[in-house]
Image 1: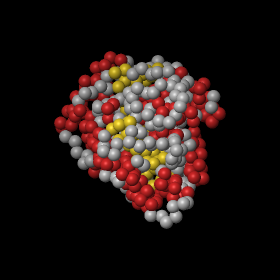
Image 2: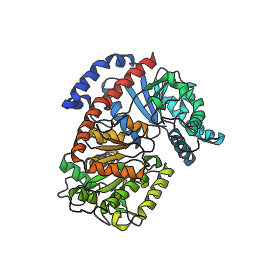
Image 3: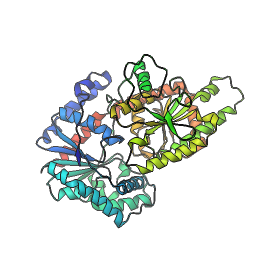
Image 4: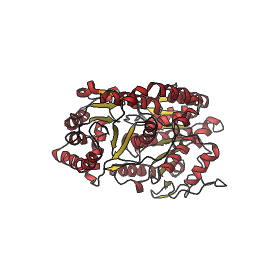
Length: 487
């Protein structure tokens, strides 16, 4: 178990300086005072599986900074593991909760699961005091509650960020495997009510995830800064002068032969000169990368069959590029399935005709520096015409919320977590079936050739994020719940 230090960042007065956040911050400060008083004298411990990558690790520092400003004691610990069998198992659990796989787990799986958590509990109980509150995130450290509750008199909550709206044999199998570990918890938090297993519904609160609008991933980037980041990271190679030095680790691109090299080694991406369709996610089959790639190819081929090649609608599709962004495998040692998915995507890309390969970019984003990684994602999103999340299943798409905040038009699948974020034809478009390739191709073409509608969706999307998905609404819900559980 490792305790994580929080670096300095935006404070409450920084948010109040923005007119579109000022009223929300003022209301937040007024309503949370009683909950803050109830939490005095205890420490809140957040425990998850990683300090980098993923929505939990991304949001916790911002939440913790605000809570500490309010006078709440809060700390963050991360479990440690070097057993690849553990990561294989927890990936299977993750997929099964999303309905993927067979949902079968063995006694050997349980032994691996418990062994890693048992190895972490000593450091946890050495730090946690009686009367504290412990919040454990997602399946990886789930067994810790049983181990901690035997040694400390604390209230323990489980925050599950994933789920499936309609349960099947796979989800029933994984929840049966996990259910013994849930008995030690006092309360549960899910993103959507439909994700909650029937057995714990009476002890569950729904708190949707949210973004920090002033984080490096979401802060405003003026044009010069945005282009500068693209240049520093190696995505763009035509920007002078360069105000800041190049990043130590550059973004890499998959080449036509499947190798990795500099983004513009084979052909210039020219990301700021062309319409761009962007999807950024971890390499996961449930993210729908393969289906999106196939739809893009169909859109391009259908466009070439049009007779009039002088009209702007033809030229817009002709010039559009598809950009995938995901973690560079050099920096990820605990996700063997992610490398498999990336390899599958590379195989698909290699089979694409040479006339289309230059219009497709699979970018590998370095993870060694969280700030630089966040700025790269920010710049990519702001440089895009459409941000897509074509997930087969999705608990909640933070990349969608980020894009909406940046006033980028979004196209999402009908996955339940995404439908809770986007209202069709109001603040984006929903293509219900992410595996319907022909329909997905038509929707992308429609969006690209509807510039005025894209402006409307983007404007409405930003307003929705301000009203529903910023960290202040989330923190208010957390404080209210934690104060209630502590009583």
